[in-house]
Length: 95
Image (tube, rainbow, N blue to C red; front, side):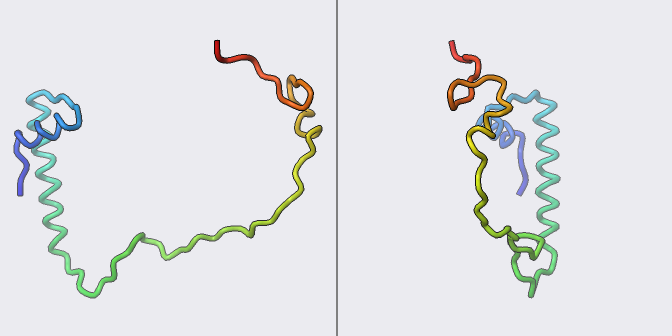
């Protein structure tokens, strides 16, 4: 299987890309090199090799979910540059 300049033009159109003729030629060459490499990978003997979902045999190590008391409202607002009652006061950002 090989990629032609017509294939590259079609893919570029689908992706809404514009290539010059030189770029199309280079892209055709690069895509064909990628396909040749993939064909070469098919030659590797994978008999007896289990499929992997990842290269590491690690599982998620999550910390224990422990509830801690939260800060008081006064402590949270203590360093606020501006506040109104029990809320942060910020400048208006929408006109």
